[in-house]
Image (tube, rainbow, N blue to C red; front, top):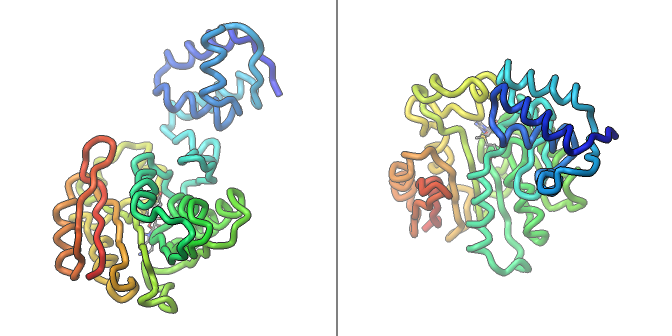
Length: 289
Ligand SMILES: C[S@@+](CC[C@H](N)C(=O)[O-])C[C@H]1O[C@@H](n2cnc3c(N)ncnc32)[C@H](O)[C@@H]1O
């Protein structure tokens, strides 16, 4: 542990932020690498006195901050961790850093399934770091969950994340193409969730360096119009969902109406496009028949 006076720390912080970067990334650096949460730091800021305890000394934290500024490497990759809801998840360049807008998926599902005792089967297609599936398994201990991903590295990371965040055993991980690893539970799924790659090719080409150079292409790119994977998921859903089973898909900001149409073409009912915190039609949801 390194003890640093609050006064010295805040002078040092001002110097670091004057070099560039954003406050959110800086807070994450201090939290994930320095071991001091934003809340604790705010308390020191109000008093501007006392001694802060940091896991790394200021020179080393400065080294990582400079590295972030010069290479655009996300702090999550420098620290190897990402905070998502109340989870601390291992991440690397092999998985998408889970985004804050995706957190709403858990809220949407909680709004539908209020009785936590009732046993249900859920799946998370393209689980990446495991964020969605782990949050659901923890929120619904009586549910049985299955998570798939085409990338073996993602499956390994998600499995470790589940083991680190829980002692539960109600979630299993399978490597494979979307629904394919779930062939033994055809027609048994109550709720399927997916945040698939949905970025159209021309948008992908213009993504900021911190995303394009560091996050996996197969987690982002959804083909020419962004809908390649969403189509596969929706078209195959009727084979795997129960009658009246739910499908919830995260989509790109302008895809809501097209995804809704796909749901309707595949015999889904009660189809809705739900907005995220920015008012964007980010999630499409419906029931099979
Ligand atoms: C946008 S990321 C979402 C990751 C995670 N669910 C989240 O919300 O942070 C999409 C994920 O889909 C996976 N994926 C891509 N193609 C796939 C396929 N054909 N079958 C299964 N998973 C796939 C990627 O490896 C990636 O982990």
